[in-house]
Image 1 (cartoon, helix red, strand yellow):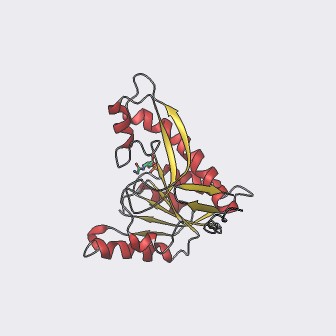
Image 2 (tube, helix red, strand yellow):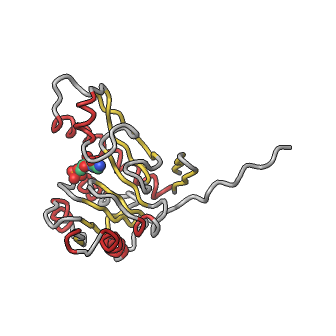
Image 3 (cartoon, rainbow, N blue to C red):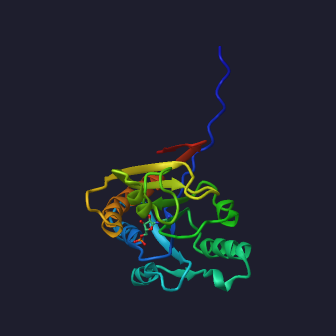
Length: 214
Ligand code: GAR
């Protein structure tokens, strides 16, 4: 008889409290806000945290009656203080799952250690291709014929965490960055709304690089 395999790490089953992190327009946030009013949708946005007061996502949240917080790096002494400030701003809302949706900063240990395996990020490329802040531009510059979007668990690297789900989007002749990004964002919003619900409803287990949901 062979030795039993090491037991898998226990599944993370989160409740439905979402805190969404944004830097920009917030169309992914808008999709989650629209979804959370649907009967049977298992998650609810209970707080929105932005790194700048001008983030459009803040106004979307306010209009939806969702409380917000701003953690601008300029208001903190250094990177470690900002990291701690982000963690505190998130913690106020008692999240089950933290969703980085267009948050254009790297999250530090103060956040990742406080909610291990419970911080996810949406990215506009098929990781590990084209990580970073200019994924759509980089895919076009590379001449990729297919790109897409990825929902992944956040780790300490830049867009390096285990993949939860991906959708491919074809690059069409004549695409520019804005047009391609808009098509990716259509796929991205659907992916995010769908998989956040699956994670919340069914739990998520991360074994090394392999993510199992449900
Ligand atoms: C989204 O496409 C998101 O994946 C991307 O910013 C956009 C935000 O759109 N994030 C990154 O590029 C992070 N590396 P939104 O503000 O309309 O949701």
